[in-house]
Image 1: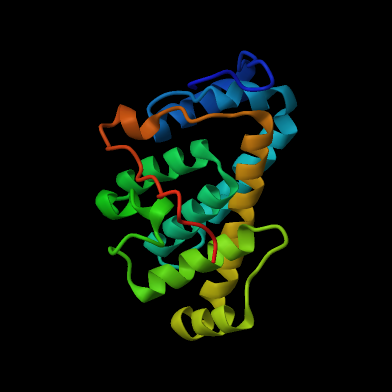
Image 2: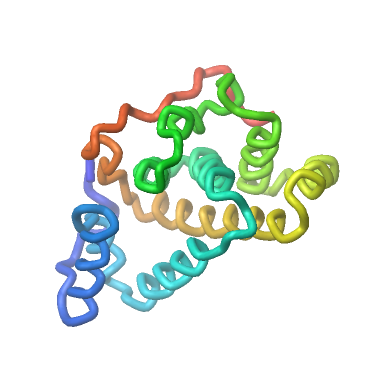
Length: 196
């Protein structure tokens, strides 16, 4: 982590801790510091990991669209750790890293299709307080994606909001996964970009 979280990390120990660290090393290459923060309440950690695995198994929404939605939601909330992790995971899934790195500035980038833009607009609108999803946007996505994928999109955005807001509130920062594997830094939106 680039700076300390608001709660000091705790050593991840015991049989369950060994399993969690093994899984983290396999998936990420190392054990993120955030595990030491969440280790203070293993029930929260277990629940979040369990939900995350279930979310990852959903397949009604195209993986690329799901990644864009998660990252657009994370950018709206302001979770650098979530953006970094999803950028890293997208690279591992073989998605176009040059395109994925543009998600934080999706409104001004020219690399996205109209469907991709609608998905990110939905993720951003659903992540605002209060949510600002319109009937028109929902209707367009229902026609584009179908009902199952639209339900999944809403649920993925909700899960990312839970994760991102928890990370931001706890002061959990990026573990620099993307930089560690040589990915260029995520694009940064210009000062004029904002929710419309």
